[in-house]
Image 1: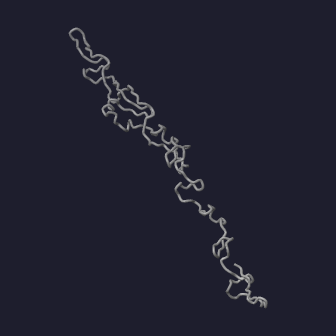
Image 2: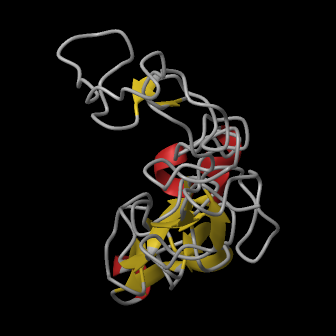
Image 3: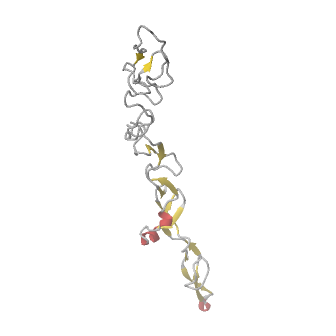
Length: 224
């Protein structure tokens, strides 16, 4: 039982964008909306003597006389912002609440990581498995094969052999026989021949026996 496939090293899940550091809130000066005021007071000043006095009013901080003159002091109100320390992205908290946190460009993350193991993009694979059956290395094989050729269990054989003796193709035969009649060696011959000349009995050219006056009728010996 083996694994016909190879061990592959992969990340089974894809990548996601994320921020490696948590979102934090900060109080900062709202430099886009400065406030101008007068740190002093709007006062009345009397000048002259006795009946020749004169009253004037002005700001004692900047000496401007107009009551509603633009303030001489510039201040910035505080506002709350949210920021990711990892990438320094910042945004007004009030605006983010209005958008209900749907700003993907801001919240979408500044780095990428694998969903399966939370490792950064480009890190070594976290899972090793066989591509044939998805099982881990060292697991029992998923396919039964022949040891000789590693072909599948139900595949045709990889070599040929004789059914009679199970010997491989090209080996010496397991039985002896005459090629003329296919009979076993110990069987009686299939032809009658002359024992003297070896010619098939009754066929030419044959041999002839010398005349024997004592036994003219005797025929030559034959061999079966």
